[in-house]
Length: 226
Image (cartoon, rainbow, N blue to C red; front, side, top):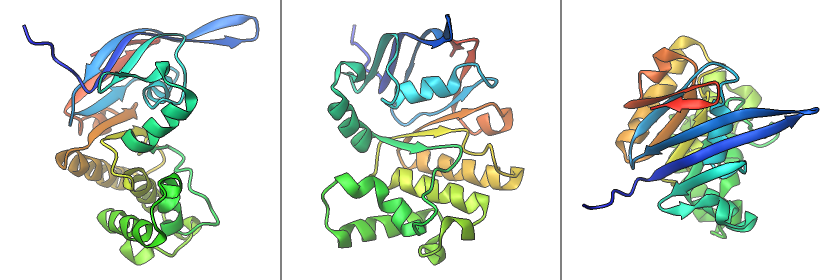
């Protein structure tokens, strides 16, 4: 029997935090897999463990127990420096609060993940302008974030996540601060990126947004139901 290698495998995952004198289980027990080019919605209410799970999958938050395998690579057996290299190559992050630098232009914000790549300035500019065009903001490349609408700022965050051409995009409530029309536009953009071959993993509590995904993983009280 042939062994199936999944893109991402979560094995026996647990994450415990200390809150005062008490230990709190943010993640009690999780086991699931995600295959290449899937569009996954991780769904659940606030406090269910979704964002903690996403940060662990993105090599940002060491689990208390368990393994995260990406392309058979055990993320938390790597050194901190190796994990940083992994994130740069494999992962594009989209945060709910956009996390744009207010005094940098759209172009400069999008170029930030390329700071460590050692590419020439001209190539960085070209790659950044390509993804800015991809998200429909080519006329606003030299504006500052506060000169953009919320939906446009989210598009900048998506462009920044895409600029290094990572195979995996992790998005934490990417439509949480947007009106429903703009939210649907953002989800359609993520859907088209999935069609182009990116694996998309979106955390959301909104079932309408979750419906854009090809598969859902439900998270409740620190456990998951695929």
